[in-house]
Image 1: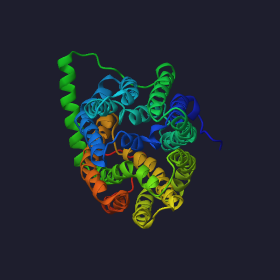
Image 2: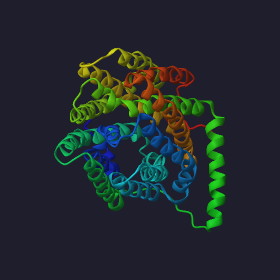
Image 3: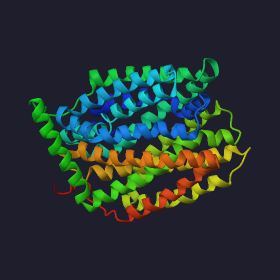
Image 4: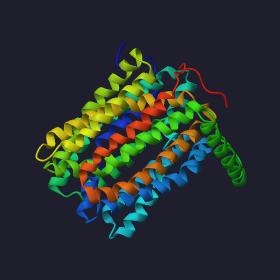
Length: 407
């Protein structure tokens, strides 16, 4: 069998090309905390920015999930991509902390237009074309193309930071993402029957669909377990996002080298895309969920015992942890989506995203003050989040790939 399965490229090439181009323009991921610190922000102030963004996402997830269900996944995703990247370009032009808060709040709100809707768009397109077996391979390929692009992006970002300044990574990245959106506008297709109704009928549909999404998510034990396992993992992600960059520079890593670390991560993520499919063929999803979280706990705890100038060891530990998570993430998405009926898939996924956003805000509320008090070594507390994740994965039962839970 070749790199692509039958019909895969014909159905999904616009999504894959979009992933590659956005990956190639992804630069801020390696430098954004350093950017905020350069503006004199403390960890508490940086975390508060993300708390506000998380709260905006939590408040908007369900309404925007319903927008995707009512108006279409493509419309919702493109509206989200375009608005968030225009706002992204504005970040270096903010003159004070208040303006920065306003911009990131709007980014958080508009970003929810694509969370859940993107995955539902691809899943329903494959289902309509009777190619549901491509769901997991497509997730792995998306990760591959994004990661391949990100081999370029952070290295380019390192050059930009060194040559013309860190502000420019925001401008170039946002502009690149807007260009990539044109691929979806002109070439990506969807299967969706739009509803023609009045504004009041839209609100009635919103209330009905939102209730169904919440009720469905919490009524089924299998869905509930995946909900809370995801929430546990996002706790680690929140802590890591805040502390990873200053943790490595605190171990004496030069700032431009952060771009190299992220490029290496992109190479490993591309390899993980292939490894995910291989592992899924040999082991059950539940077994992989448990094994990966069990490995992550001691790995993250070891970060507390690494000191300057051994930044290479710290980077190696983080790269291994991220690679494991890159294997875990598409497996979780595939397992979760196979449990959900199409008509409320976007709303249920948005319910999950809302819970994750609320968790993100709560963890960051503590992490900022803890990091200011204890230093960047508190990144090792990420190991604690693997405990509840492992517990909830224990409650996951294997489902046949074609089995969808009853409404």
